[in-house]
Length: 414
Ligand SMILES: [Mg+2]
Image 1 (cartoon, rainbow, N blue to C red):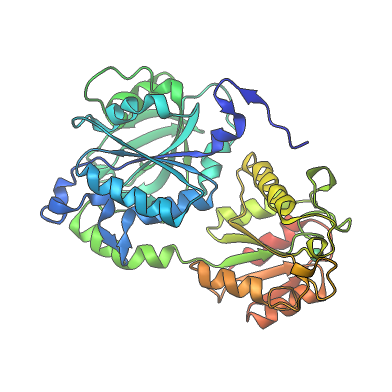
Image 2 (image 1 turned 90 degrees about the vertical axis):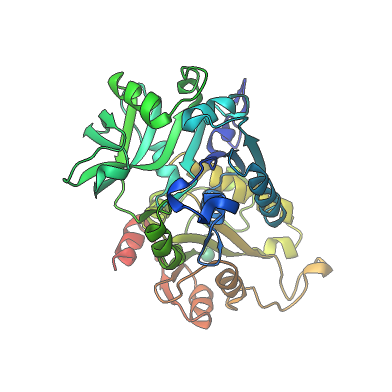
């Protein structure tokens, strides 16, 4: 367990790691607003819009961000340097096209940097979906690209699609119609080989690539009834100023680890000791799909006793997220307490604020992440878990066994 197959393109896990963002557009519809500042860097709710997209990609486990820039490319390079300082674990590349190449041309220009499969998104819109669901949804037959779709919209400013099951049979860019339609949400999961067919010069993904893939039966689409907003017009930018910070502040589900996500065998610290609780992966995915944060808060006194070290705790948590990714799920952050008042390793001997029943891990997450406390809750298998929840002023639920999925789905109902 824990071993991953190697491919010619490196580690297979990289498949889930690359997020490419189209940030090269001129943003002409915003007039003077984009004279000095490129559209993806316009302030929304007090920070550059691009930061919301990078935050979303990062929490879904994407660690390699590629910005496809053009207009005001130097401003995007500076923004990337800022983001890399804030998130040292991210690798951020900026590829600046030599001349306006269109969405397809920009992606083709970055061909050498692309992973075999990658997430692609428009840099001027936010579609609040579970990004890993788009990547992993099982489909029958071959496919080259997947599009996140938003039903019931005005198609005039977007691409409208006809679908049969998960197959997009027709893709029409900026289709004028008065009827609500299912539209292109601007978030894609793409196989690199689909890029190889783009001819040299200026090309549009929406006009040149998607219609052709649809005709070939290689374009898939999944509908998401989730918040979506693009900031391409002055009025939508103004709406976004209020709505985007609001919609990206989320209720959270805090999971205890041992005895809730995995069978508690006592001091689990290696992947071959880790056995998922029935329904745990689906439970985490249900939290992701509902647009809530999923956190783990776990006491790991085994570190204090010298049974294992913090490096092993981190490695196990990385492994857990690698496992989850294949099922379209992820944990946004893991918090653990390595301390104990009777530790054998002196560095960890303390009565700390983070060891449950104290609420330190919960309160740290609440100050570091945009969390809506009201509807947040914790699931634990011990009284100390519930006490930590109470001390953090959120509700706590005792998991007494059975399917974690059915417990979580019951609790997620508003
Ligand atoms: Mg437990």
